[in-house]
Image 1 (cartoon, rainbow, N blue to C red):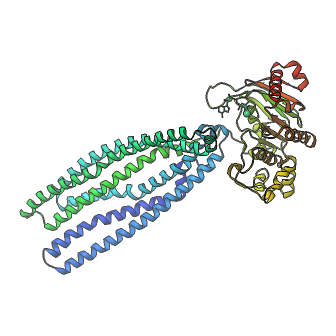
Image 2: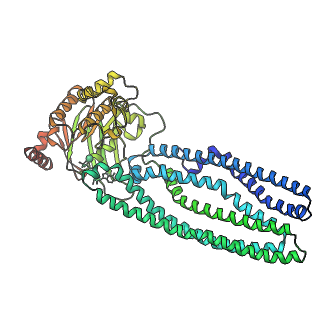
Image 3: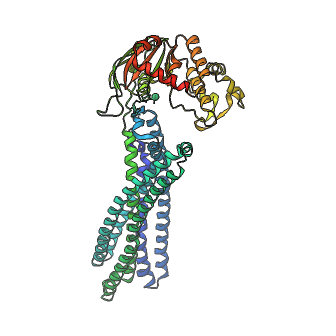
Length: 575
Ligand SMILES: Nc1ncnc2c1ncn2[C@@H]1O[C@H](COP(=O)(O)OP(=O)(O)OP(=O)(O)O)[C@@H](O)[C@H]1O
Ligand SMILES: [Mg+2]
């Protein structure tokens, strides 16, 4: 796994070196051109020698064309290197995110990761292009131009150097100020991005709660902050040009005034003065370019930091490298397990959990909302790792299995189900990539999805829209169940995964799971307490602790929490 932005450059190392080299050569050639002007004036025009004009004119043309060609090569190489870097970064970042566990994902959030993949990488690409084309070339060209002006006339060059120095100080102040301002603008920009991401992704919920006005108002205020910030920076940067021009005019006046004196004293030729003025102009242009590059780079610092942060993130769940043992059966054992979300010393959401589930058992898991039912089952398939204690699956520590072996043998239908754009068949094959049509049909029959699929145009080839939006909630749940069953897992975990089905359909599914798949361990989390009554045993959770694990009859007799849950459920059903 590549863990830094710099490693993504490796593949383009030689282009990253060559591009600035070509740009520097082009810059040096450009700076030679005013020297030719001095020769044309002094040796050609002053002495009315057409031959000299043509000779130096010819050299000038050669330098100009060479500067152009080398610059062109430099630009092409830079474009190749920067877009290659961006492609590598996108790929690297995408792979990195795939290796993340749920707790890594919690840390960044979906929108944070999307912004890094898109806007931030584009910023880095632009910054790389600027560095390669301008960053090395312009300082070298400025210094070389200054050396050439010293050679033309030492004393006059002091005026230019003093001018460059003063402008340099002034521009540095502007650059530093604008970098600070840019950083603030980009923080506001991030907030705006996150807002867009969250509210566009959740637009249906926004609409169903008629929150459009509130969401738009909050968007407006965030967009206004970004606008205000950009105007502030642009206003500061707007000083750049007038100041550069003013300094240039002063430099010209100074150079022309002193130069004219030197010429009348016979200490300087007209050609040298012409060259001098051209150099002054060139140096200022280079400096203006350098300022722009700095400003552009400063806006990408935050992006570099954010992308690097993801690259350096260590996946919080790692799997063993060596060959994974076969999972013997579907037994599960927790021994003194505690768990909390995030790093540090937050509060435990699971406390001292010890339990033993035999292979093939059907277990119902019930408890009030927030009692850590999801947190408990997430530890079995290692979506998160326990902080303390040990979890054993198939008679081995869950940490001994590699990722493939765990996902193959443990199928989880999450509380927040998701289908992907593609046909029904393609979605089912997420469970088993080489599943035959017969296997797909069989899984659908089990999940009672067969009848509605038949009604859809194309059957198993019916196209599911992004997120499964063209299916009903219950149809989505049945397909998610079929996708899990197709793996023929040893352990099946249903996290409130049948909640959108009517009670009769749910009961039929549970019955066929129990009777037709006796070897598969089934863990069924449900809010409908009554629906797991016939499970072999029921685990009752309260505030992250086990307060009962027995059959329905025994729990009704011994477990206060379970009794209350049942009474509440009956009340709900009655009403
Ligand atoms: N990703 C997370 N980051 C931080 N805290 C979390 C996270 N997920 C859940 N929690 C917290 O952990 C506790 C247990 O949540 P969990 O989702 O396990 O409950 P649950 O029993 O499945 O509830 P429900 O019946 O509503 O699905 C809650 O207090 C919740 O706020
Ligand atoms: Mg839950």
